[in-house]
Image 1: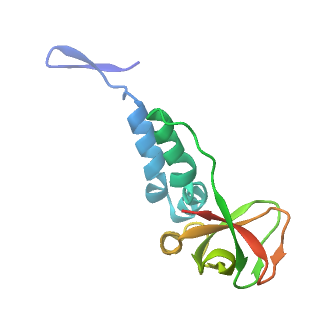
Image 2: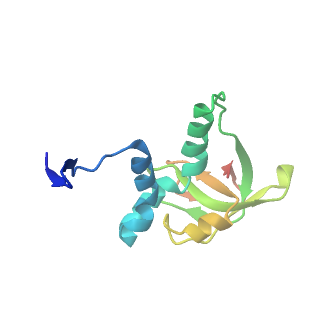
Length: 143
């Protein structure tokens, strides 16, 4: 422990860490670290508000938890992704009822914040699917 004397008083030079500092640091990390690291961080943060922040705030407010609601819509164009991970791809849902169509937003990866902002939903691609043809039904998670 390091301390120094300032105006006749002993001051502890260790910084105090509180919960607020840790949370703000975690939220600011994608904007502070290098571009590649920011993109990696945003993989978790791109759906962070709906999946993590809202349920946490509701639980702190004493509200009972609710399940995520998924819709189904036909895919407007073909999708090809790597297998192994469930993917939440930014998309735009349009149409009504059985005529609902989901179209992927053009994006440059998980760090593309503008594409995420343009989307009104996420197309959920299961981990075992590599190709999904246009016209097939896919799960959709609203924002």
